[in-house]
View 1 (cartoon, rainbow, N blue to C red):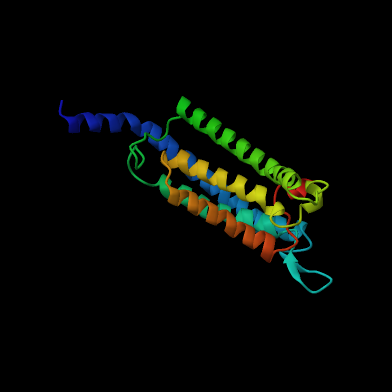
View 2: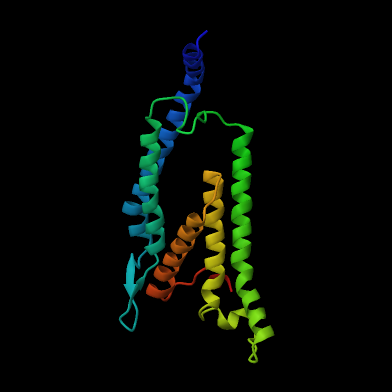
Length: 214
């Protein structure tokens, strides 16, 4: 049997799994689109009275209660479309040669790795601020009573989010690409810094994690 014939037989054996995977991806994508439409057009307008943005007593425009839910649900739309479009691609294997349509132990290991990375990053995000306060108290002559006292003061308020968020982004880049370059670290750090610029500086009434839990 020639290599080409063997490859064709492998593809024919994979076809049932591929069709099942395409069906799952297509219907999941459609369900996400329906959910997004219900949230954006029905649920949020009727249930959240303050709307997308609001104006404070001083006249400053600030995010209202529907601001972040609307952004989150809106991001689901391109992801759902991408899921539907990729489900229509022909071929039983992904671009890297990985079979599709089969759930294996490697999938469970990948999910476990994601959970561990998220947990570790959130732990770093939580402890960096208090550790920075302890370092300040050990080196400076004016001690700080605790992290809560400076949780709205730069750089304490953004230190945990920056390091924890950068760590999370770097870990997922390394997990997805199975390699890591300094450019990846720079992109991750710049992305988190951009989020800090938007949510902490431009939207001054937003508390970055973990400051909202204090």
